[in-house]
Length: 231
Ligand code: SAM
Image (tube, rainbow, N blue to C red):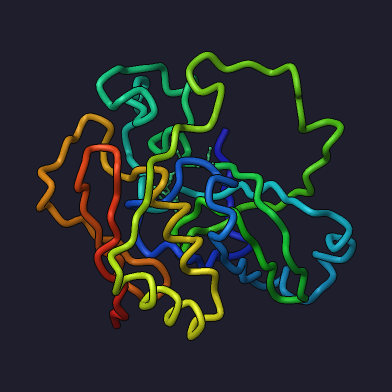
């Protein structure tokens, strides 16, 4: 059977590249974005009643990870990237049909757009469907997962003395909780699990319109070096 799907909206996100996006939603509550609805869903009718829910499921396309040939095994970063697992045992981005799913906080409902936070979605992600989170059915307190039972451990994030005021300033300009976003995302330690970088190596990522650069002065400590605007 073949069936065509088309997006109901596109996410405008704080995350401009895949690197340093948390591996699941909620890990960075300060990660915000807007889901812009596409016609014919942008008239208000399609979202009527949605203001009654705090969270929504988003079904979306991993549009930057689509592949022609399906993989049966993947190497999830959570397992250090060196152990392979059946694709259906993981939440890897490379998967049949390229469909992702995230429960995210719904901060606002407008006729043409939804305001979201706690997202793990790249800017430009096409959303295929939106469903209200139903606590009694979707939350399973007795659920177990031996591979990923708890959130990944976070690491310490320190600031170079000039970097923190830069982040505050750009946060004010953007009207976004930028300091919290940087701290929450970097605390997830974006580097590949097996990589122990030399202390002088500089990493960087773009959040909103700012470039954030950091080093690892010790293997389990991040120091943010600078937060600068980039076109
Ligand atoms: N919560 C979703 C799920 O379980 O289906 C996504 C989990 S996946 C492990 C999360 C990663 O997907 C993020 O760290 C980011 O690098 C990547 N990602 C997010 N949006 C993407 C997109 N549109 N295309 C490709 N990769 C994306």
